[in-house]
Figure 1 (tube, rainbow, N blue to C red):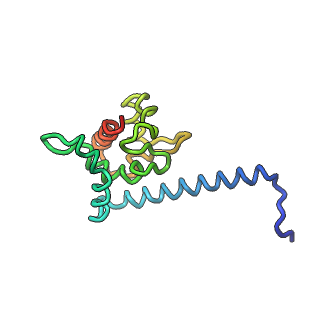
Figure 2: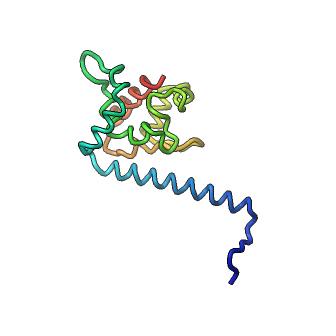
Figure 3: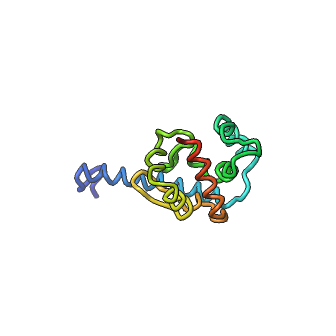
Length: 151
């Protein structure tokens, strides 16, 4: 039995490690999304953290009639990835973090990717953010909310 030796070229080993790390990261994100999708309600601590992180942008989209129609869906389903940029998600409120190129594709493409899911070179978007119970109109309202705050 050989110890500490490998028959694979060094470049192939490094590539395999990168692929393995990416697969592990994607699996972790998917697990988080699945776990988040298992519960239809956020805990009070989660809601407080989400509200605190989006305080500055909420003011710009709140109307005299109340908050933006997509804000609640964003906070309960989308913020888990879009607040921090997990799995290549464009960061909420930051046009330089991938929003400009996505917005340029058109709102119908954004709606399609959000509702049906998408996997691209920069990351992946699970259908309805992993929240299968969401209706399409709620998802589209959340997309509108993110776009309006990320231009």
